[in-house]
Length: 107
Figure 1 (spheres, rainbow, N blue to C red):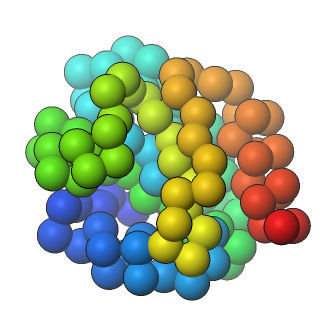
Figure 2 (tube, rainbow, N blue to C red):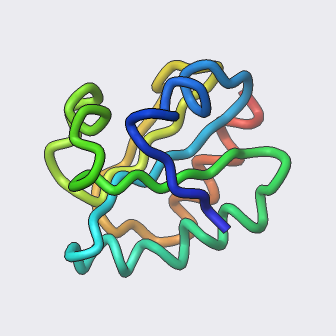
């Protein structure tokens, strides 16, 4: 299961982490976010040990959303060794998330 992350622990869990981290920027009122949610959970389960997966509620964590210029949700960002390496916008299919994770792990 994807863990919730907040402004207060983002630096520790994402920016100071070695390896690949996927962050879903979302909000509970956002229909496309709710559509994307099961795919994010599936990635979290299937890629356990290879990719750390977090969900950041942008309404409750405006500082981090602003820092990464998240203007539309859902936005998924991948961080490798603490740096943003890729992102996608919108309720993309599971395969898009899965293939991106596999590609970034291989790099």
